[in-house]
Amino acid sequence: MFNIKTMNKIAPAGLHRFTPGEFQCGDDIETPDAFLVRSAALHEVELPTSLKAIARAGAGVNNVPIDKCSDAGIVVFNTPGANANGVKELVIGTMILASRNVIPATEWVKTLKGKGDEVPNLVEKGKKQFIGPELAGKKLGVIGLGAIGVRVANAARALDMDVYGYDPYLSVEAAWAISRDIYHASSLNDIFQNCDYITIHVPLTPETRGLINAESIAAMKRGVRIFNLARGDLAVSEDVAKGLQCGQVASYVVDFPCDELLDVPGVISIPHLGASTPESEENCATMAASELMDFLKYGIIRNSVNFPNVDLPISAAGRVTIIHKNKPTMLSQITACFAEACINIENIIDKSKKEMAYTIVDVSEERLDAVTDRLRALDGVIRVRVI
Image (tube, rainbow, N blue to C red; front, side):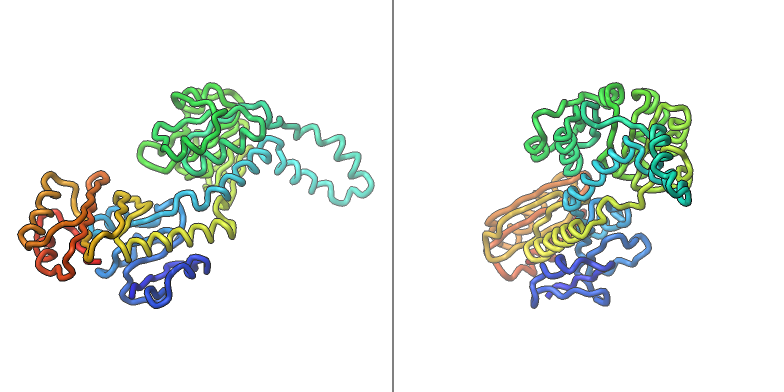
């Protein structure tokens, strides 16, 4: 029986994925094998020694102490793409809102309350101050062509926009999914210099933090509209405000409000609604549950942020998984442990991700105490499991 502790309210569709009799879930589990979490902050939470995995029902993992988990051999999963459609629709919706000045226009209409029969004429006289361009024929730059970026690019192309896509790490899956009509931008400057609209869909890393700043804004077309529904810190708020004040930026849409921009004209601050749809919550919960089930039952890793993806069909009576440091000679030391224990290896796979590595070994033996003791004694081995 595997114990799953829920750290937030999780969509029932996800909880129903867990097989009764094999898994028990709840927020009061005392010795959890895994955490299932949405937005709860885990940085100050004590990680029990029983904990083997954390699944974040969402794409971002800022609320999870990744380094601490890696050191303890805890695999952290996220659910990339599960909320992609919800975010895509919000991006397209906000592009229309920002382009057509819908929000300031509707706020202005409210000021006409009490004017009685004058309202229709006042509307006709005043609407010209909110004129805004159509999307068709404009150039959209999509920075980051992952699950969300590809959908946004394809949807914008269907709206007759000319779409530029930039992603130096474009995956094979994304390449197959993206429309052939998307222009491949060779650099960020290609996006900045050509596009009337720019939307960002990259993770927040030391390299991408402050991607939208005074220098990059200055390189953009005057009157550019910028959309940031990925992470607030991808843009420097002070630089965005200055760009809006001087007219270099026509509007800035952000799904991560900050105090500095709340009262700046031209900013549309959304209260983190990108994945706030019933469908997204169900998709994320279901995907996270499936990841935990595959890992706990079979040792399979899919969509981990701190360990490599490793998938090996079970081909023998016993399976041993080893989480270890990515160091020279580790694999030879691991196989030597099996040889010393006189256990024949039927199948093996070993992959690494930066400084961490993961090995699955299938063997014909079921009693594996002798080899697991040897494996745990190796310098660099963090965790050994028998499945």
